[in-house]
Amino acid sequence: MNAQCCRPVAMDLGVYQLRHFSISFLSSLLGTDSSSLRLDSSSSGASVVAIDNKIEQAMDLVKSHLMYAVREEVEVLKEQIKELIEKNSQLEQENTLLKTLASPEQLAQFQAQLQTGSPPSSSQSQGTTQQPAQPASQGSGPSA
Image (cartoon, rainbow, N blue to C red; front, top):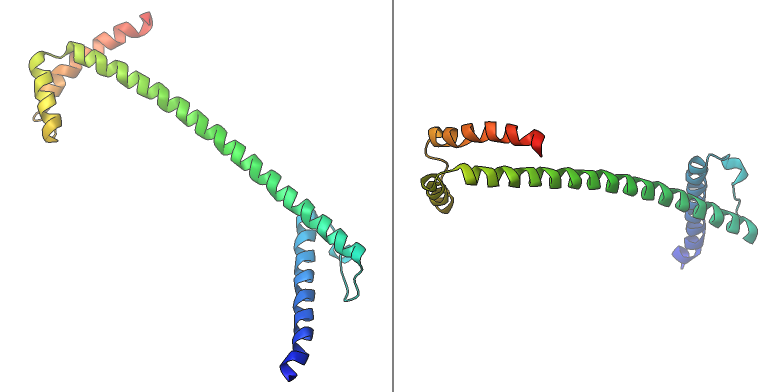
């Protein structure tokens, strides 16, 4: 029974401390003087409404900052997607060109390597494939 008697006092103290913390936090967010927001134990309904309004303002502020950050990140990601699509297109064109310049034997060797998952057997076969492709791609660049 003694514990029940002390419980409301401790709870009131906890509520008061929470209000004090909330007021301090909100005043730092909103840039207002915390003394204008202080509540005592006999706070009226109007001051509770004022606190609720300040909390709502702070939440709106946080929401607007988050929305701005999300929009900024979306723009960055859109730009990265655009760059990746362009690079993919360029690589597909290069792949098509290399396929047309490769001999049937080289294509068969490449297909066999893909199936086994092994790396190219020699750099000589890569070098012969890449050397003719470079002048051709440089010559086709300005005409495109």
